[in-house]
Each structure stands twice: as structure tokens, then as C-alpha cells.
Image (tube, rainbow, N blue to C red):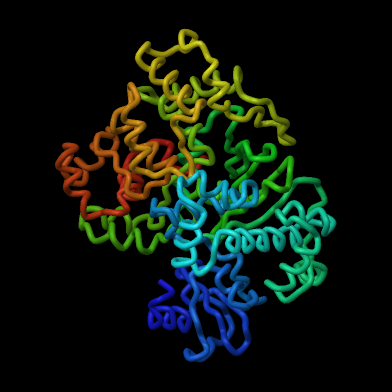
Length: 489
């Protein structure tokens, strides 16, 4: 979008927050960069240049605006609606792959050469993987500086910097302030002193309807791993350096997030996975405008705009749970999953006492005797095959997955039909165009609305909803009185 100068200028002059994260405005006279909705008086158009990423602005010698804090804007929706190389690379960078494994590790996960990845990221984002990862480290450092009382040396290494000198230089270059000055400017609203506990705000593009989003997560919560408590969804997280517990509470203009981490180096990964689970980088205006064009969907969209697709923090976990939920009720699926968690999950400590385990890894589940599972023999075979392939690496489900390839591999497994594959594509892989025409709830809703109710005819009608059919599923499901559609009382 940053190449459409006229469109960008109009967005900046109108301070349109919908475009925050889509592009960044760099001001030639002040050498700062801003989000489109920056509250200051817009600069003259001839003094504006536009960049696709904060990293590109930083590479061009611009520093972050102290008023609008462009480093805290929602992420670009592009990376969650595409499955090409650049989008998959951006999802991996957000998940901390470059910090942990370097650019060669990023390339190995994607199956391309480092040169090819560098070339494509530079062409589209104006910055390579190292610069993009550096921008993310700077954002993490600022968050830790402003919301904790940790010593600066601890923050430097927790944010992923290799040395304190690099940390100091980067903070000064990006924010035009020293780390100490940044902390001094932060609001003094009672910084936390509990080790490993962080309280922060997750931004999103309005509108956001939390009903089906948190309703779905709460209604399908696996005891011991997830719970709804005091108006917040809580769950355990398996992270690269340890484990964590997160509590997410919907607020009118943000999601309140409280993270308890065993290792602060996991902070950027935990934030990225929570944002992905809640679909916070979506562009609801674009989605709803297209769905509204169908006169039979329009009343549903107008009634409760801004529905998101509830996703997951662990793709392999969700695939296992999808198999456990085949042809059984939500309560039965939770019971099956809870038994596996108790027997094979890793125990964790939770200060609030409601969460007890991490969901079992594929390697742990591969050791399960299928005969011990209280399910039909065919589903035992499906379960054993899935966890076996996840454990040995022959099937990989993650943010780097090519959606078409992952679908093909899943369909080749015994017991995997279109419904199971599409629900995994929608909620685990993040495909915004995944569609469930054979789902009973979808067919019932279609019939009530006057849409075609047979899978083939409904699929043909839904072609006009592309590439947002996964969001249409949320609106169609919402016509039912199932608990997944309502915030728990």
C-alpha cells in the first residue's frame, strides 16, 4: 500500500487509524516516522515519504515518533492473509526465529536460500530479516523498559540483544532517547515488581466483537490448560525458553494482557502468539465491507461487526484437538483432551491455581497406547497417525506452513476429511479463506437465512465472499445459541 502515495497522504491527513500498521509515514524535515493516525498536525505532502515497515524507516535513518509510538501499532494484516514466502517469513520473524536460529535457520524452515529470502523481503518491505528482527527487539526493549523495574542489563538480553552496547545504541537510534530516559518518561502508574510478570495492552483495529472470539475459546477450554476466570481467558503457553501463563481480557479499545513468564526472552514470542490466537492484526473494515455486499449476510454483519476468527497458540495442539473432537460434542472433546493432559502434559505452577499443565507435545502423545483411548478404532488410528507424523517431523504445522501443502498432507492421513482439514486450516494455520460447507451449524444457518444449504451450492455462493470465507463462517455460526457465540457470564 505504501506505493499508493495519494491514498497514503489522504489517510495521514484524515488521521485514519484503520491504516496503522499498513504503512508508516517518514517526515523528511524532522527525520521521524509516524503511524497514519499520529495526533500531531500532518506534515506537508511534499515532506512525506512512505515505508512498508518500521524497520525500513529505521534503515533509512528515521527515528520513532514520541507522540504516536509507531512501534506499538497493530501488525500489518498482509502477513495473516497470505501464504507466500514473504508472509511466512514475517510470521516466523514475529515468532522470534531469527533471534533464536539466525537467518540460516529462517531459510531452512522456509526451504529457500538466505539470498532469496533477503531479496524478497527487501523488495517488499524495504528491509531484510536482520533489520526486521532488530526492529522487533527494539519494540520489546521499550516495552520492558516502560513496564518493569528490571535492570537495563537484564532487559537487553531478555529483548534478544547480544550485548548491552548494542542495546543502548539501538534504543538511542530508534527512539532518540537513552534507555534511562525512556523509563523516566513512562507513566508512573505502579510498575510491577513481581519477577516474570508483565501487564500490557494489545492493540487492534476497531471494531472488534469479543463475543464469538472469547466465547469460542472459553467454551472449548481444556481443563488444566485453559480456563475463563473473572472476565479473562487464561491458558498455559509452551515457549522456546520455558513456559508461561497468559490472561487476556477484552476491553473497548485494547486487549488487556497479563503474562507470567519463566524466561523473559519469551516475551516477543508470547505476544506474537497471543495476537495471532485472537486475530488482532485483521482488518475488520475490509472483511465486513466485502461480506456486507451479500444481502443475506449484511444483516448479520451490521448486527455485530468486527468478528474475528478464534485461532490457537500451538498448531500441533489444535490439530490433535480437532481429531479428538470429530463427531462428538464440545463437552466430550474437552473430556478426551483433559485426560491426555493429566496423563501426558507437563505440570506447571500457576499462582492463581486454576491451570496445572502444558498441553502434551506430539512426542509425548506418540507414546500413548491407542487402545487406551476411549474412542472408536478408526479414530484411534487417525490420532496415532497424526501424532506420529508430527513427532517425527514428516508433518509440520506452524506459522511457516504453506497452506496448500499442509492441506494436501493432512488429507492424505487416514480419517481426515474436508471438515477436519478446513477447521485446522482456519483455526491453526490461519487461512482467512478456509470454509466449512459440510459443517452442520453452517448448513443450518444457511437454510435459515435463505442461502443454499447443500455443500456444493453453498460453496458456489460463497465464492463472492473470498478471500474472507473464514470470517463468514463466524457470522453464520453466530446465528446459533451455542455457548461458543457468547462471552461467559
